[in-house]
Length: 325
Image 1 (cartoon, rainbow, N blue to C red):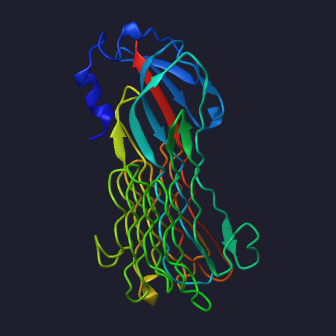
Image 2 (image 1 turned 90 degrees about the vertical axis):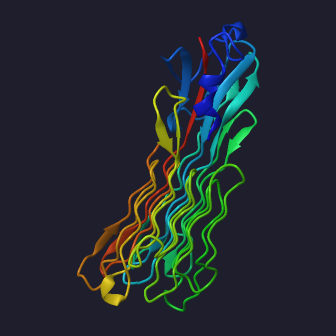
Image 3 (image 1 turned 45 degrees about the horizontal axis):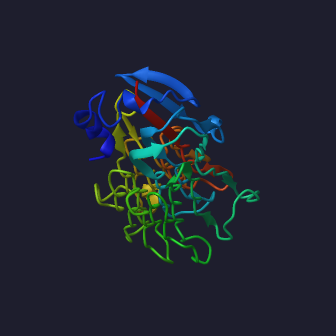
């Protein structure tokens, strides 16, 4: 259970976080709810400062940007892993009357794959692993960006790296002929990604979430790639919100032995997309993670030779700070 969910039951308005701290801070978007003054920093406010206006203890929630899912090139088969959710950190911190520069991590971006252009992509194989999200920082609290989704590794000469990337939560493994290990989380910030199921067509693993690991390929249904792991909820904003869900893996066309895509985890995880090969489709687009929630991006399936496939980007993170008024 995160610290945030229990703090109000342990401390009254005159207790540890009470008025005697004398805080009247500036910075971010300021709201009030439930007797608290709340400072919220989104991506566009990254690099600006929080100043508490005095010394005392504050509560914080620091969510990093999510990782992007893998991207399967047009006219190719296989299944890729979903992106991991951004790191989730919550607790209390002693502050003094000075500026604290806030960094809000962006989600990992990803381009479109087509047979005619791979300039925006980094892999040299026919499919492309995702990228890690950016970290979010408040004072000495750093949440690490979500791990990259692993590529499917079955294209061309089959030299792909199926392993998901490490991060706040780990990225899911693709159905690769190389490493099939899922990405691992930073301790205390998230969960590992799912592994692929090595059957005909493969089933990719879902990206890890703050509250649960990514699901393995075929774990929830023999014909489905892995769902993203669920996120965690916090009421620090004044309402219960779930953050940092993992991205879903892509699905392979059933006509070549594959299955359906994985769904995004609760808390802003993006769902994967299905392959369109042999179905006549020429565009496939996975869902991106939700901005402000740090969700992982979904993995994209392939499509026919004249088409394009687009992986889901990770969602940007958020930093929230509050104290009683």
